[in-house]
Length: 214
Length: 289
Image 1: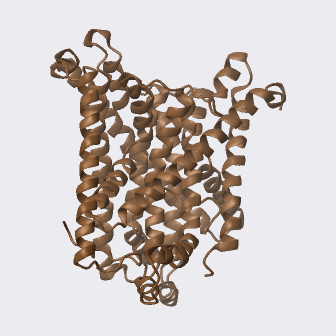
Image 2: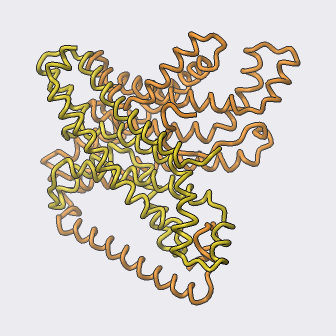
Image 3: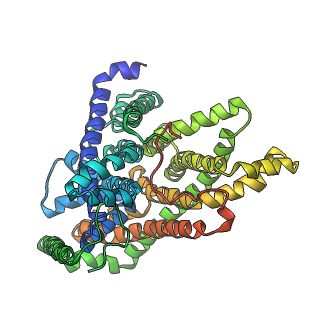
């Protein structure tokens, strides 16, 4: 217990670091994932190829390798940014591939007849998209997007090993200060549980409100 | 330009001649943009002298090649241990979660939920730092705990989703509980879940790279050693260009195997009693199902 009360500000800093990483990377992943999903279902062949390659490559890239390449590689091109930004970039791009797949399969659950019906009613593409396809797709997409974002929050731990301020990294300082390692890890675990369970609860609420009635 | 009706979605109509022409224009524009982007990256690579002989020569040295191969071997070794052990742990935990004894069920559920909710890296660091274990066993143990728990859920879902009639028929024939599970339910469940199991093994293969962070001498670690060598003019980008295709290629091969397996299984009469799970990456939401 002492470990937590003595180092509350250290833990708080790490916790906020993880939350910040998770939030920013989630936003990037959702935006990029949406873009790539729209590429993947586009009627233009070359856009589909871009989306497919993006997903196939990033989904099969070890995240550590991506961090390694982005955090230590991009500076070689003269691109010098704070490590936090690089970490958000790596995490966001990696997760966008999974978000893209979730969104795409959500769009694919909408039966073709729905679009055909709306077009035969004279709806424009925008109307079909906004009032027929996306509302239905959104409902079935909530659970997979939720689990992807939870995975993102857990993956953000890797950033700590590349000297970004976040929760897992706090163990090093505590270790040097001579606190019990086991207890410092217990509180790190509690921190991660709080974050993942919050996201899980958030998406459970969303699903209860808007999810598909099964 | 290919036809866009390959997989029809609700979004687009079958294009007419004018639309097709428009799509063709979009296609040309996006191709040009992409090629320009590639060109720019290539220019950057040349501009920052990434293709000089000094940076690429090391890869012709025997010692460097051996270092890389040893790293790759260590990666595959960690993967093999982690795969076998997590399959075993997954089976044990799945049996525990399906047990008729309540304490066993609770314990198994607790373990599965906890290890799935924890970042793998936290477990690996805990085992490495707090329990002072060697890098390889720490890495394998962390991967086993995490992937084993995920696989336990996969096995359990598979067994639960075997058609009820199969179980009833087996009990009616006078089989015991263990016999029903081992001879009737498990074979069908595993066969149907094979794509998902292999996809989870891809996750394990990807996560072996976490060993780099606890100084396990795996592939990425070997790359880092070469990249930070001043004698070779810090060939960081060349190292990434050599390592990533191999890493990504291995994972892709395994992913494609999972997809191929799923497609084949769906036509297999032996998996009729269970719906074949599509090969999917990542994991399910904790506390769901």
